[in-house]
Every structure is written in C-alpha cells, then in structure tokens.
Length: 241
Image (cartoon, rainbow, N blue to C red; front, top):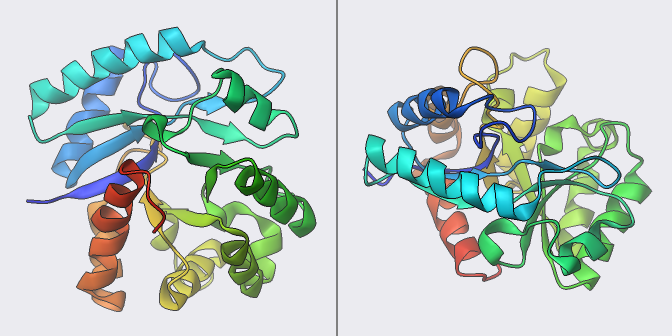
C-alpha cells in the first residue's frame, strides 16, 4: 500500500500542546498507520515571543520518534518541520535556524490567527515568498476571511502559496461552513496538501481513512493521489508543484 502523507501533526512528545509523552506518540503513530498514513510531518508550534522548544531538542525527539515509527513498520516515515505562527519576525527566525522549514526544504507550514484580515494574510504569505520560502497555509478552512469569500483563495495561489486543509474538516455536514469551504476548494483544485493536525488519540486523533474515502468518492482517484502522495513527494524534493 502506497498510503497517505500527513503534512500536519503534533506527534513529538512534550514540546507543545500535542503528544504529552512517548507512550502517547506511539499510540498516535499506531493509529495513523492503521488509518493508512505512511508519512507524517511532525510540525510542533513555533511562535515569536513564546518559549519555543529549541531546535536541538526537537531534532533529538524527532530521532526518537523515527525509531518508534520503525518499530511499528519500516513503511512508516517521519519528517520534521514547524507549524509557524506568522509575524513580521518569523522570516528572520527561519534565517537564523531557530524555526524550521519542512525537512530542510524551502517549504514552510504557516498559520495565522483565525480572524486575520485578508490583506494581512495575503501580505504575510507574499513576504514569505519574497524571502525565498514556499508557504503552505495551514488548516486554510479556519480563516474567516476566506470562508466568507472563498474566491480570494485563487489570489493566494497566484502569490505563490499552497493550501493545506485538515481531513477532519472535510467530514462536516451541509450546515458546516468549514466543510463546505473545504469541498469547494477541493472541487476547484485549490487544495495541495492534507493533514490530520493530530494532537492526541482521544481528541484530535490522526484519523484519515473516512475523509480520504469521501474525497476519493466525490473527486476521484487522481486528486487523492496528488494530495496524499505526488505533491508531498515533490515537496521533499524541494520542487514547486
């Protein structure tokens, strides 16, 4: 089985509000593997002005988690990055090596506050591109400015950003604004990556199978392959999609 690539997860133990310890990380990885995930990006939070776990500690824990993943299956792979909260100083933190790109590529997983204005969102992503990075907008369905005006996403793509949605958001009903937004983005071909945004095993767990099945049924095998495999593999090669 080729499996799925989860671009967004909080599986490193004891570094943010995700996994609390290695036992929970093992449980999360086991569940992810059962759900069909074969690659996971560990993307702990990084925020300017807060006490972030230093890179040396992140890399040490990452190596431990890799070993745990291999104990579950040789086919389960982990890559390392950060989920970066955008601010004017984030680019300097990246340049200093205090914040991480995804697996040392130019790709960065970047989030904004849910009530960010569209101009702030567009300008922030544009600054990342101008600095030489390839921004992937984390859980795009959370930004109210885009949910209210989904046509604005096309302009973000023209700026040079890519779009990640959380799989859990796809499963909402017809009255769920985030689910409707995700489905519109999928139908327009505006989504490039998927993620579980997993933080634990009882709440915000790394479930993937049901959402991927829904995407496959509504939008076809080709899109699923692109989101869960082709795009992530190009990312790891540091190539544009």
